[in-house]
Length: 166
Figure 1: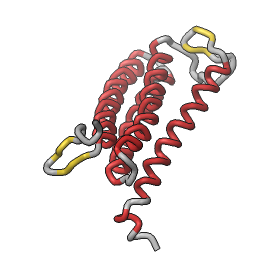
Figure 2 (figure 1 turned 180 degrees about the vertical axis):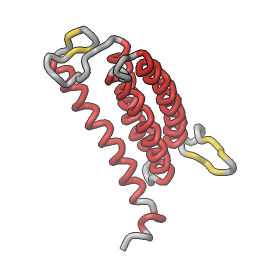
Figure 3 (figure 1 turned 135 degrees about the vertical axis):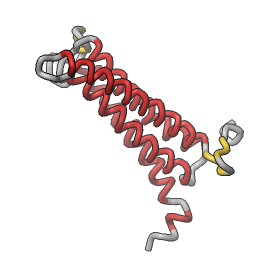
Figure 4 (figure 1 turned 120 degrees about the horizontal axis):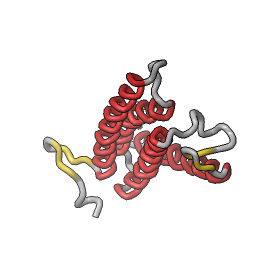
């Protein structure tokens, strides 16, 4: 399945994980641009010239994550692991990139707290159990760092890179 899913771009074969990362980079970049318009509209209407903190965070996070996706695409393209391992390693951080951005957007839409880590934890005006937030953050840390670590090690094991190392 993964071998068939390879896409051709100007004669180069891109592994499925790279294609996924590039598609997500484009989508997150667009979300970043659109949340930038939202941020500007809020700043324009606010007497202090400020947007809701989580609208600002969603805008910046989407832009930063879009560029992280490009780096992941390059790492996946040169990784020595199987297409399936690289795809899963890329997919896990991508899920959390989008989950984080959408949760920030929801906090902004719901006029939530200016800091969701401050106790009592709230999602919008709704109370959120501390354990749930801790579980989400713990799983985010494992998925993002773990997925990137797999891609990075796969890249470092590539013969082209290995030949450059002493």
